[in-house]
Length: 295
Image 1 (cartoon, rainbow, N blue to C red):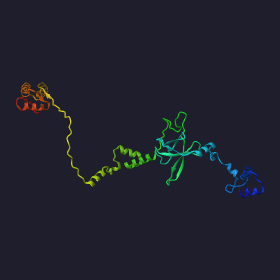
Image 2 (image 1 turned 60 degrees about the vertical axis):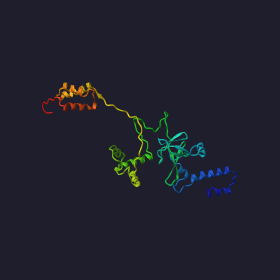
Image 3 (image 1 turned 180 degrees about the horizontal axis):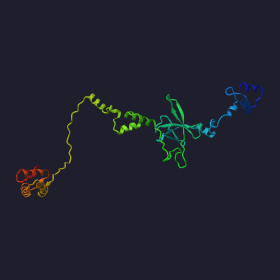
Image 4 (image 1 turned 90 degrees about the vertical axis):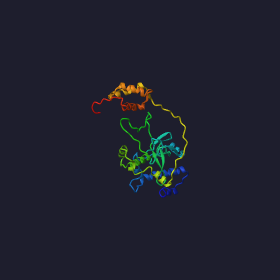
């Protein structure tokens, strides 16, 4: 530019900036069309014509660029589906390293993509890095365009960092190499950490360090409504119904037993003493026992 164009201006009278721009543009076309580049051996126009459509990235429309100039980044909260809402659209942040559900991310428009968005992330040194996030497309019925088709495929959500750590801790606790092995051990009631951790060790250490004996305190008996439960009393008729089968099964004289019961228990007897009454009849010798063979 300095040697091939500006040096010629000494021999030309330039009246205004428009004339200068016209001369500069004509020189640019001439230079790019005729001068061979030392790196590839072609003119710059010849090399430019070899570019492919996918390699030529066009800038956004002028209106969008003006919006970028006056727009400011905003915070967006990460949903349980690892999505954010920004500018009335939804974007997936599942590929953002270390993203957490409920986390607030700083989001801005993407200057290289209309309706695109970028999220502020940070590297190990704390440097701010803007990462592009894809927009989530929806069909005319409001379903996600990339959603799994029921009965045809399955798409699981990517685990967050917290979920990944939880799975690693699960394998560590169960002494397993895989999640399946950890689940099998847990189903088999295996003790975590192979029983090497005593969950009550801190209690034992605290009590031993304090070495304190607590004496029982004297208290006052609380008043309460105590229900008196009366035991069932069997009448002579009820006693007869219960004792007759037992006496006859033992080979006794039921008529003699009835007379004794009427004399000994005119008011009946408590249900818990029924066996006592039976034994009394036998011990008194008034109950005739017929032994026919061994008992």
